[in-house]
Image (cartoon, rainbow, N blue to C red; front, side, top):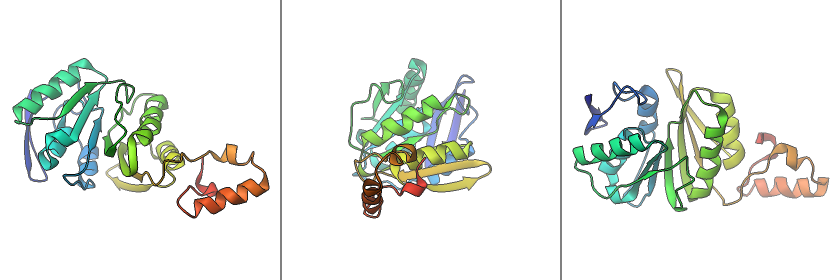
Length: 216
């Protein structure tokens, strides 16, 4: 089926199908995420789990296709996104089939956008978050749409060292910035340190690392 969306002034025509998430049109969670996105032509953006491509196409219309990478685990989704890129006359986007970030080698993204599947175990989201952190430059951001707040909030905060939460109609947008290449340690591991090292760790937290009281 063909749908037409006007996303914050950008007209997008898309072919969808019942096999894909939200085939009738842009869902509220993705719309909320895009409302929080601020991009410039110097950004490099990953649409992680692109489905039929609406997020990546919207971003490409703003900053140009050569600054956008789109990926999905399904070959059918990659093909459909490719067709939709052509339908919207967008060139330069790099489109990849990848299980999460396993086949994505880039480590210079400034922004990763994702609406992960809600009805899977947390292993998919865990990989998205942990591997996404590694692929971002320092200062880069992850924005993720979720409906099950607590686990995602704790996990992202534990990896990134901080998080902002936005809510609308039962959807949550979680935004985190990579402040350092240092991956935050868990509270469990921190408690195994000597008191002297724990004090040193907390002191480091004040300069941009993660505070112990906010860890998992």
